[in-house]
Amino acid sequence: MSRVRADEEEYWHSSKFRAFTFDDEDDELSQLKESKRTVNSLRDIVDDDDDDLERVSWSGEPVGSISWSIKETASGSTSSLDGRDSSLQKGSSSYAALPKQGSSYSLSSLFKGRNKLSSFQSLSDALTDTGVKSFAPELRRPRAEYKDYSSDWSPKDTVRRMQRGKVCSLERFRSLQDKLVLLDEAVAGHDGNVITAVLIFLKRTLRREILFRELEVRQVALCHLIHFLREMGEQKFLLDLLRFLDRTEEVALSQYREHLNIQDVEKRREFLKGCIGLPFSAEDTSHIQDHYTLLERQIIIEANDRHLEMAGQSELFRKYPRKASILNMPLVTTLFYSCFYHYTEAEGMFSSPTNLKKTFKIPDKQYVLTALAARAKLRAWGDVDALLTTKNWLGYTKKKAPIGFHRVVEILQRNNAPVQVLQEYVRLVEDVDTRLNLATKYKCHDVVIETYRDLKDRIQLTAYKDKVERGSAEEEKIHTILSNMQIRWKN
Image (cartoon, rainbow, N blue to C red):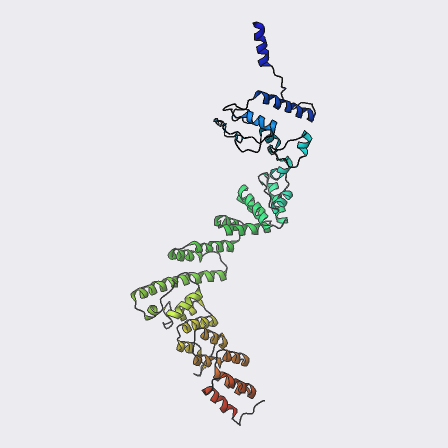
């Protein structure tokens, strides 16, 4: 009895199959034969009619049908597993169940990477077969490929890699000397993006006093940092830097730029008033004073005109409603507005164009050009004539245009001035060729005829007769001039 029990224990604790080890020194062919004998021996044990066989995962846990996989490997047939449903047991979500039906891979083929319809003759065939699909996990990359993230790069190498767009950590540069060497290498590389990136790193890791002191002797890097601070709107840091460098005028201008961020007009006016006392140059101080004065005038004009427009007391505002507020507008726009709506006001009024010209010392050319455009837009030809008429100390009047009469003609034509008005100013163009071109272009026939008469050019005058309307006054005028025997023609 004891002998039977010993035999049973020996049977259960022994196996005719040898376990696989990585230290096995057998050649490839013996390993393949051993595996084949193992599969064939297992096939004899497993019956095709087994019901509800469990599946196994890669770790050996029961999650599928092993008999089906063994049979497929040994026979190489295309049999299916109809009627064999296997319940998927709950386990780790990192394991994937083997395909159940219609799969083209067996358990062994998943390891080998081959289809179940084909088989290897030897292990060397498996290794040399180019059609084999590898299911092995991807091995980790060589350590050399991760040198991008190492901390072994010198400042020069770091700058070069940054220029090529590589990811480089600057945190390894801890000492002041290393950081300054890195900055010098970035400047020597002449790459603005790299210089800015290094400056941001230094700005974050150095005290302001140390950073400012070192940048004072590195003008290229200093200019990059100033530009960066202005673009990013870091006004406080910028002012501290400029004060350290003793650039008082730049400090004042930087503070003056802050008015652009003030939307409330009254607060902006008070801010500009405070900017007048900043240490600007004499010329800049004058501009700041003019800016403050202009805004003050605009506030007064806007309040008065808004009241007139809402009350409907002005015919001009009813006929030409305002399209926008005059607040915060440039001086030239304000002058055009005053010439359009307040042209006839006395000089003592804040909204008077002549008052604006005198207060802000607007040049004659700029004033005439702006006023002419405003009055021509209103088709006020009498005001245009008065604007261009001057009187000398003897009382004689003459037409004068600081901008040139050819520009006067162009402005009037853009505002659809009648031919009679255009002809009056085309005649005043001094250059003959320019006068003929303008007269021909805008069909000022009388000017063309008179010019050819003064030039005594019979041929051109005769040719121009074909361009005027038959039976018109212009054609009759040409006939009269051509028949005048007192004119000594050149041709």
